[in-house]
Image (cartoon, rainbow, N blue to C red; front, side, top):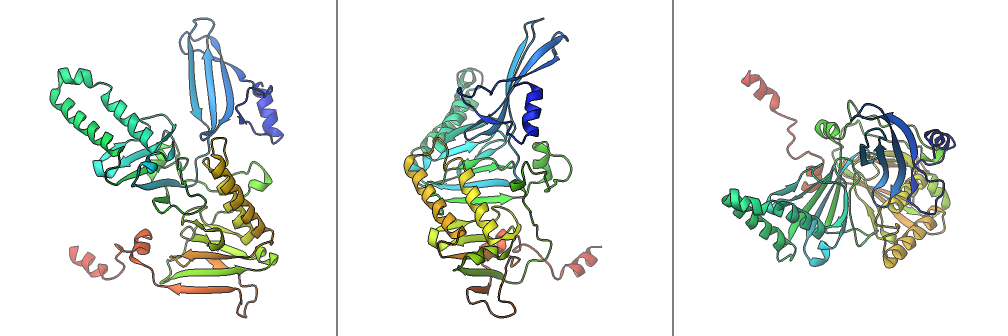
Amino acid sequence: MSALGAMEAAGRGESLFRPLSAEDGEQQPAEIESLCMNCFRNGVTRLLLTRIPFFKEIIVSSFSCDSCSWSNTEIQSAGRIQEQGVRYTLAVTSRQDMNREVVKTDCASARIPELDFEIPAFSQKGVLTTIEGIIDRAVAGLEQDQPARRVTDKEVARKIDEFVGKLRQLKEVHSPFTFILDDPSGNSFVENPHAPQRDEALVVTRYRRSPQQCALLGLEGEEVDAKPPDAAEDLRDEVKSGGAIEPQGTRITLRITDPSDMSRDILKSETCSVEIPELEFELGMGALGGKFTTLEGLLKDIRDLVEKNPFTLGDSSTPSRTGKLQEFIGKLQDIIEGKAQAHFIMDDPAGNSYLQNVYAPEEDPELSVQRYERTFEQNEELGLNDMKTEGYEPEAASER
């Protein structure tokens, strides 16, 4: 496919990034005449836009110059940076946890607080591995120059040997430790072997990037949430709460009994979690962001989120996991189509979420709204425990 052909494909609404396949005759590199930075004559750059499982869209580029025989090849990520960063905190308590699959992008950092050990962002290429594999790569990197260090600096070499020994002991999981994967791009994953059920050992936190993290990703200026959709069905509305945090949290429970319930309006804030007890499913706070939609729209977003997870229905999924997730998606689809009844629960510690009462101003027999006092942990997540809102004016005046 030529560069012009790629543009025409984009104009027809076709995807530029096609799955890598030897049987796809149309998947040919685009050839572009470009300047050789070695001899400053013209060479040829070949670009292949493709999808690779777990790493989404990538650009494979190869440059060659017939004049000076200089060549260069590289791979660049072309995946979309998510609206929020993501942090996975895993409590590793058994050897089975060491076998959890991990997608670590090049901009993700990995930490083990118990050893005060960190793999910084952009220090390694993106990789599909396991928790044990990440530790093995760290050990290999530390041991790479040890023979030379033992000659030039024996003390440093001894300390590195001691630390490598501690890393190797982690693999035996004689005592629990914490593994933290932090990716400001939001494109890393840690496997949940219990999916779509909640994993008690894994905490997933989505957060807004800091200015330093935005600069690290090459994002300059303010982020813009409104993006031109690739197709009409890709259009989404994002809502960010601009009001104050309510004095109490809100728990909204709807018993879905009729297909008309799917048309109820929903305002889901960024701090709201969603639960469907009949499916043993829970969507944590921060996932999917804030939304103003309908119940049907939110359930479809949940379905799409499960389907797009690289560990769920991809080529590398195990048959048992695929069957379990297909069953979950089928049950969720039955709820969307009104073929099954279920309870839909929204829990918002900030109290800024809403689900439409179709009987208003009368009481809705299928809808209950409960106000509750937040726990210390919920206040901590909302940043309220260390917030001082009263009594600081006199202190500020006395300091002046």
